[in-house]
Image (cartoon, rainbow, N blue to C red; front, side, top):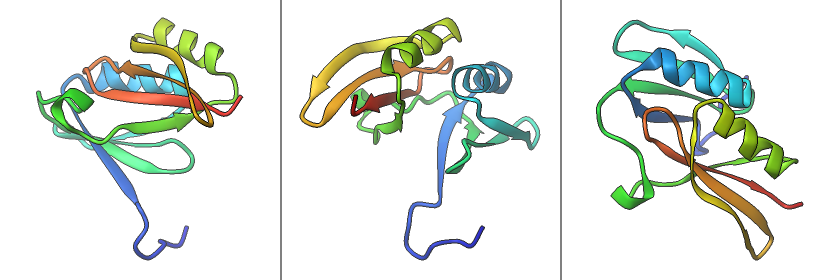
Length: 118
């Protein structure tokens, strides 16, 4: 795929237990991973690529990090899958102008959100 000039191209998260992180995102969202050894593991969600770098830090809104937000057609089902795959719901489904969303922490503690316009 041709890179797009001056567009977000890659996203990187901290992580420590790459096997737990990979298992969670594969089960919850179907992401694919490539292992680059003990310091790095990359992923692709089919739209955007990224990776997890070895770190004990966590990406959370309380720490001032940006909130990465995924989209889901069926928000309730996605929330349930996130929880049953090892994620922790940190803010249950709530409405906002234009849709609804929930926020979760992955097994490392990184905070992300999922929204829907339905």
